[in-house]
Image 1 (cartoon, rainbow, N blue to C red):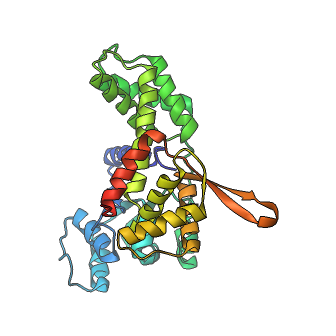
Image 2 (cartoon, rainbow, N blue to C red; image 1 turned 135 degrees about the horizontal axis):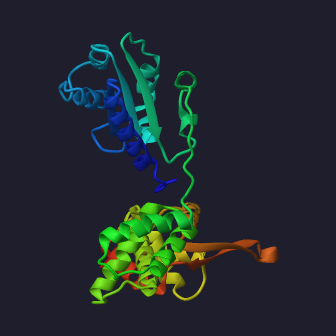
Amino acid sequence: KTGTGKTLTTKYTSQQMQEVAKQKNIPLKIIFVNCKLKKIADTEYRLLSYILKEYGKEIPFTGIPTDDVYARFYEILDEKPHQLLLILDEIDELIKKAGDEFLYNITRIELKKTKICIVGISNDLNFTDRLDARVRSSMSEEEIIFPPYDADQIFQILQERAKQAFQEGAIDDATIAKCAAYAAREHGDARKALDLLRVAGELAERQEQKKVTTEHIDQAEEKIEKDKIIDIVKNQPLQYKLVLYSALSTARNKSTSTGEIYSIYESLCKRTNNRPLTQRRISDIIADFDIQGLIKATVISKGRYGRTREIEISIPPILTAKLKDSISKDINLT
């Protein structure tokens, strides 16, 4: 689950460990790697290069066999006694992009002077299922689950941040509580809750209000929801945009069917010089839109005439014209 404090807690705890290690003269090296960043953990080579750089050792961006890079890595690790705490944030991204060879090698390494501890942070509870059985066996991991924040916890986080972000008297606890309640009800994500509070503050500022109110929280939630829909539509593939434009043109204020949408879609493909997909494929795309919350598709029985899907647009009417205009530009509709 995103926004539950995993990374922040890990960083804070590692800082505390570093301080204790200094006090007790324990040689501790902490390396934090965000595996989602490009050119950091896309490959074993790049990840090893990044870790070596943290040890002050530069290697060429490319050109050295991975086995040789591993050899340098092992050599540097065992140069002098110390403990390495390697934190791999978004570790599932590492597995997705580079496989689990790095984890296999680092958990099987035999060092004389150095001990290694790996902390993996992930939003995917099942990512370990994709690891090789030998890797899972050698990791001997201990799992810590971070549940979503509840309303009280989010309130405390927002209250603390509000003191830093807003002028005194610009926001009260009732407004913060409403923001926390929204966030707890929807997702329990502190990051999104902070975003909601920020947008509410921006709206109040634009309206030249001296205080952020619960009404601004309502407006902020509506704005964020609209922006989310626009982003979802903007990132759809071309054929998806053609289908959605057809659905928006067909449904309007009434329900429609896959057949009606397909009829408009075929016409739209001719106008934009695109090859139409089959009606079955269009049905799959409509099902995807249903999952994304852009439309609502309900299967209705027509008795002896079989079953059909009744389709309604879930996008707020106020956004429909804006989305159609945006899509028409993307599909080169003239």
